[in-house]
Image (cartoon, rainbow, N blue to C red; front, side):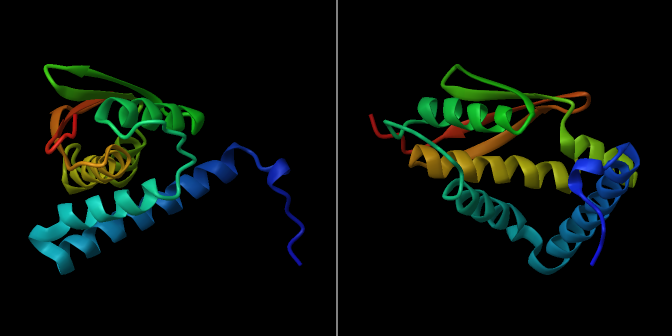
Length: 157
């Protein structure tokens, strides 16, 4: 039996885990891109929709506005520095210290590469499932602060 306890982990343990997760995410995205090709966004949306069904979401109405509010609430619980609001009919999502950017830096991957796009489509899947209508992301800025818009279609009013 291993005599470790998660309560006794130190910074080095977390750094090692981050390196491992970064490696696995890099390999996962590369493999998906190789085998799925141009359908990669669809796969990311499907994964996001599946994740939405597992989130501790508490919504009284299924609208893009309510979905964004709940999405931000849940991801803030997970310690993500995220904001979201609507502007000109689209959701604007801002993430400070994006974890995907950290992975890109760790793995010497280009910022705004396939991994960033997959993450944005993954979020689109989550929001689409919560809102009950399709959502499509558009990257605005990447870097220390990532901003992307989310356009919803077929919104029921």
